[in-house]
Length: 393
Image 1 (tube, rainbow, N blue to C red):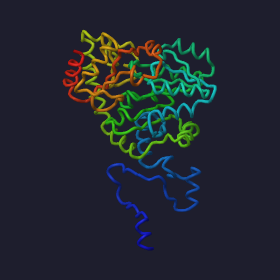
Image 2 (image 1 turned 60 degrees about the horizontal axis):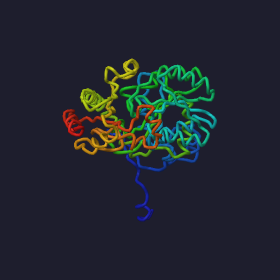
Image 3 (image 1 turned 30 degrees about the vertical axis):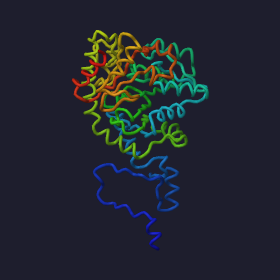
Image 4 (image 1 turned 90 degrees about the horizontal axis):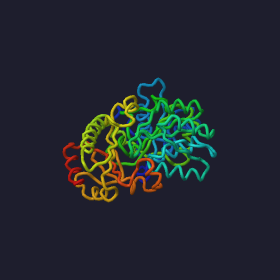
């Protein structure tokens, strides 16, 4: 071999004792020892990696870890897929599990991106119907009117109203009517709530948020109870529509997961303290937080959530004008259109996350123009409250 060729060729990776941390594998494709081995891996007869869009060791490690967490305590072992974003995860589920002419039954107080995606899918024959998923009669009436409902899609706690829906009830109704229950567990994370344990078939995450926890990457995940359903319906869409994640974001997620329990405990403790402070403030008219004893969904919260999380929303007297004044006055907190980071973040849903949702729909479901959403961070809670106090004025 010439020195020119030697410089081009990759060296053999040493295969001694394993590294302490999951390695970041930055490779777009993988080597076969023989054409026969390649054929077996392509056919699924032998385990192995083919091409980065189909998965790689770092990506698979992240997917499997999230699936293990969501399946904690279950007899069956759910499967996981690591996606390029939370929206990629959600889109893969809708496209993989719904056929043209079928309907998704969901709630109106969803993340704005999910609502916009469902509007796009409506143009392609996948329809949407909404009702209050906490209302048993409303759900049954919707299913009675429409025998093409094949999925109930729930976000609990919801964004940004923090309503909490009974997953066990939804699963029972869905399965009785030959539908699937899909739950967005982004706000709660598997540390605080595990929808599969209450009968959900599929769980989706924007891992960009609390699972990563540090605002360093964009990614998502799907966890499916039924391995056969995942292989037949979700994996083909995942691979062919280009929704797969990348090794760097998977590596960041794996590192973020190590501190998830500690972070969620601190997020929850701080958020409760902030919620109690805001509820007593004379200029605050409404506080939405699952940890408050007078939350309308208290019974469900107690049964299915171990902690209450770092998300809350509140409304100031004076509506949009006072809300915008508040956001322009914050100094310690940060105005940014995301959540789940370790620091305290402020968002105005009507002009940011839910900007694309019809104002009448927003108003009907508690997303008023004056509503402010807080991701309460893990800083000293006294510093958070001090900034809120001076910003409210």
